[in-house]
Image 1 (cartoon, helix red, strand yellow):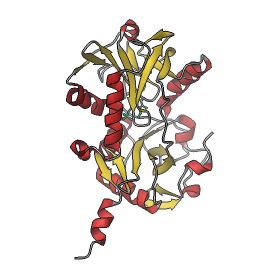
Image 2 (tube, protein in one colour):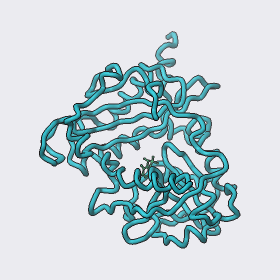
Image 3 (spheres, protein in one colour):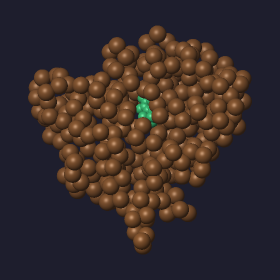
Image 4 (cartoon, protein in one colour):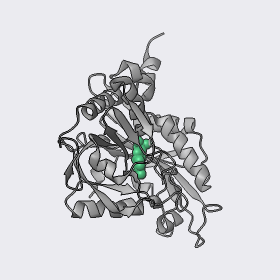
Length: 320
Ligand code: PMP
């Protein structure tokens, strides 16, 4: 269970910073009853040596949030740039000096009985949660192919990060944990590999990497895009976006999941079959190391991917 200690004192709600305890919605809210809302998850990484907090590609997340809002027809009153400014202010206001997870949410706070996305009041909030340093299990994770399928785009829009869209993945996660696995891999309704419960999947066969295309009902992950770039830059290998069969998971030399919270999570076993030689792949480890360095603001080549939180304050404080 999440303890209150995981939260920070201040939360952004509809343009204002309020005490976190007062950032609430009614039990009659449509967002709670019908799951009509959308959200984001953004990583903020504390770098002790530099005394700086770095936010990983916040604008990309807020642009995806704007697309989610457009897809659902929920009104989002702020531009991605305004939400970025609000995020930086909120992180400073809470004086965050540790790893944190930024959680923007646009949710129906209105209490209408009607099920629709338009014409009902919404609340736009940004909350912060503490993020444990070792979120990723050392030694790699064991996965099962879930009996639950990812909802197809024609039923629930896949490229919108919707609150209600996580019912299926939550059931898949239960099933995986009850069977003694760490995580579930969901297939599409046509039986192709789709994604983890909150992550995208990449598969290596020889020198070629595969990942499901955006049209196979995945959430278009920001980490997925970063990792695809790094596979070219760091490993000199290529990534092909194409539908992946279930048996290709079993035949793979390497498989990993990637996403904001998990960063990059090497998969060492799927459905009781070892992936490759059953140990964390060298390439996955290298990509994870690079991704960690980037998120800490320690990789000069990828400073454009991170937004420092306190740097602008220090510039202002300098004597003229
Ligand atoms: N798929 C799903 C269903 C997710 O919830 C997430 C996490 N946001 C991802 C993929 C990975 O996306 P990202 O790298 O943008 O966090």
